[in-house]
Length: 216
Image (cartoon, rainbow, N blue to C red):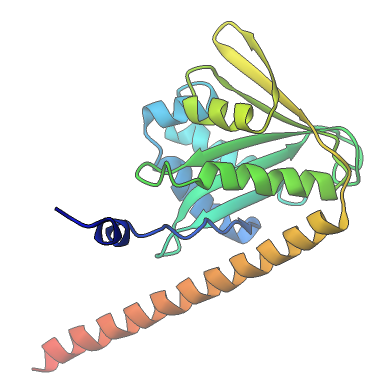
């Protein structure tokens, strides 16, 4: 029988997800992430089953100047989680007031690690710092992950015809939220740079290995 210390050591704590703000240069990675979602996952993310062409149209239509898109990257720089924060107030969307809608998706095999919750928390901080007063999420009632996030955050949830609308009233920004967002952004950028360097090192080693085999 394992001792308590041995059993505890066997379960390695997972590093917290680091959320990076995306821009138009990440559109291809965002598309790859959504295309990797299966039928059921697309239903839960978009509220209906959509084909690849609709996914491409959706990604192409994202305005990174108007909205905010967040991502969590895996060790090979693939997107394993994404959050699209759409500002519903049309005039001066990022300058305060109004409502922002959040959609979250996490790749299969990457769930139950807090990625969705971390994306939600980062979006909530961004809303507060941008002066947005209400964070809104719409999902199917069967989307257990999003319903869990909504209830955990204390969102007001309205149900109708198998769908749910969740609202969270946000307090104004504070020195703490501004600092937290800045630190999180820097950590995520550092993490991305580290993973990029490791990926480049792997490619270099792979190239030398193949060259070695060819010249042997």
